[in-house]
Length: 492
Ligand SMILES: [Zn+2]
Image 1 (cartoon, rainbow, N blue to C red):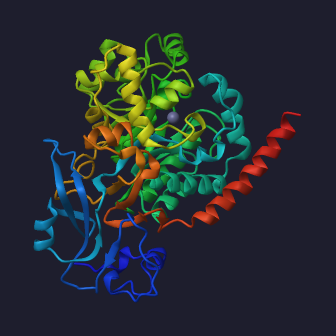
Image 2: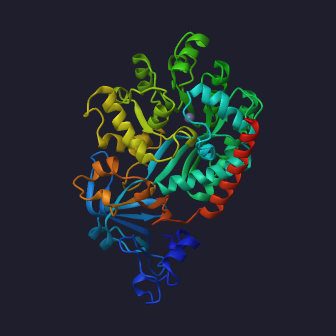
Image 3: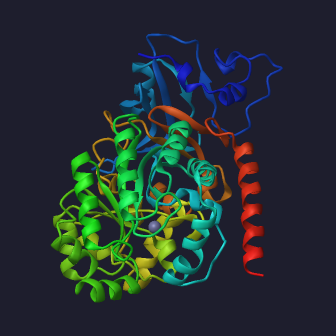
């Protein structure tokens, strides 16, 4: 058993006050009182025989296969693992913990899984809006990236994204951007769990001259990070079938197979891609991938807006994890992904935000809501996608889509302790009849009260324990000023 000190970052010590290693109940009257309704984290005297943490809630929404919801529940956590889940009374009778996160008016649930992001693009949030995908990419995003994106940009942008994701209860993300080593270093520090892709693309990019160069650099990155940190999985991110040719796609798959890591790729996203694939390859994207053996290994396909019926069958058979990005698909008018049809065919579907330049935020609560509404209006059927279905896509379904359902996605003994609390204090939760309905159709980022990843507390009641948010705000603001004046100069 470990003690609570490794959970107790300096900021948390401040929150808890000077008497942080004794029960808050024993604090002197001079200590500031807890804000009414805020979750109290009570840190006991460190007892080497005690477990690390107990997280409580009025409800524990487990997202397990049976859909169990435990009223007045608690989760026991030790050494990064969930070791027991049950009624709070039983958990508290069975275990003594060095840290307790109270659960009054809180829901405990698995952390959200953002299956597709370009984290550092938070710095390009709002730089070019209201454009079609290829116009947006070729005339704004790719040129802006070549001009502005360097290791420093990626560090600041990824820190900004991690701050936003922790704020909103995301605990795992699958990222695709440049300078993956820098991304992985930020993730290591901020405490999130991530798949970090080495982007492979056949054009001059911020960190490579060509597809061959990006693949060589990608191999270095994967070699360096494989097995280095259990929260960080280095993977390959070939960009798309319109930015790589079939030989380059095959070479990337071979590198991924050799390293034993998955691939994340944009797949059948827009009408342009559909047309391009037909012209360049004489077939559609997923059919091409299948014919060249590109799906012979774990694959995460972002978007999948335009699959044929036959391709949906291929996705199910090949266990491709599809990541639906409803906000991005709507904003760029890429189309409406046939998510309900894919789920019915047995395809593993998760949710993602895409980059903040095409969203323009990293709010998974909004993705859940829009995923449901978009299918309903597309099929003109309010029953086609329930709140429970989209909550699964953001948790256990997302974990299955990225291939780690044995580790995360539910609150069950034996899983890693990636756990959030959602506060039911805000007026929009009054009244509450159905917890799942409220989580999907009402909750937003601001309602997340605590975030724990791998048993480590990252955010408690709006206090960030692993990110110096003021420094990040300042650095991001300074960098954005430079980008804005350079763009103004270029457009003069
Ligand atoms: Zn994307």
